[in-house]
Image (cartoon, rainbow, N blue to C red; front, side, top):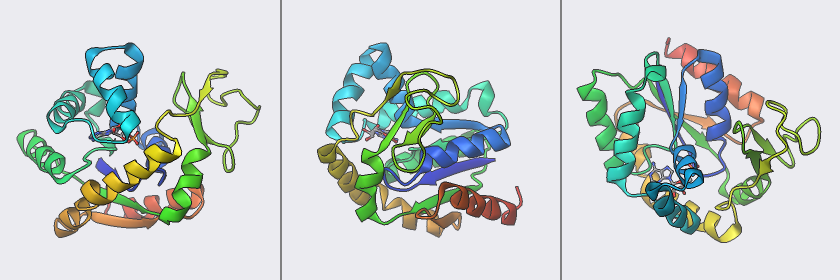
Length: 218
Ligand code: AMP
């Protein structure tokens, strides 16, 4: 199963991708997480990515495409993967099409999480995650069972993303509308775009996704 998640920042792509990855035992590939790991490691790519991410802009296509190409060739992608945060523009989508053609892979579905943009700033400013295992939380909707402690791995390193501040979020939304939204007609034309109401509860969205996946019989 090969899936793509689309939707603006804060739509819930990461949360749903994580659930699908656990349920179907397929790899979750988050380009944002890959770049954050580079920043953490202090690599050359990380230094470049830090500035770009803090500005809310997009990392260069050629480097991003190269990272994805290497990632989907890894063993854990053998039975499928979920792309969360890639492609981010039409050029990246075309590069992905080429990768799929070269490796004889078939894209099963593009899941679009539709949300009310006015509510996104709130969602984003409330979210945080575990620095150790990546589990995601929200101050309003999904608090850890014990305050300050990750439910999954027990770490007390719960962190907010530095690009989740108001100014950067506005720029990320602008970039989404300008560069990522053109992917909607792109995939609609390929007849693989499935819109989902992302304003429902996390569990309800998961159910809707399951129904879609059953319908397209994977
Ligand atoms: P995300 O975690 O998906 O919200 O991504 C965080 C940031 O990483 C974005 O605002 C971009 O700066 C960068 N980024 C993530 N994925 C991509 C991509 N496919 N192309 C370019 N930049 C990306």
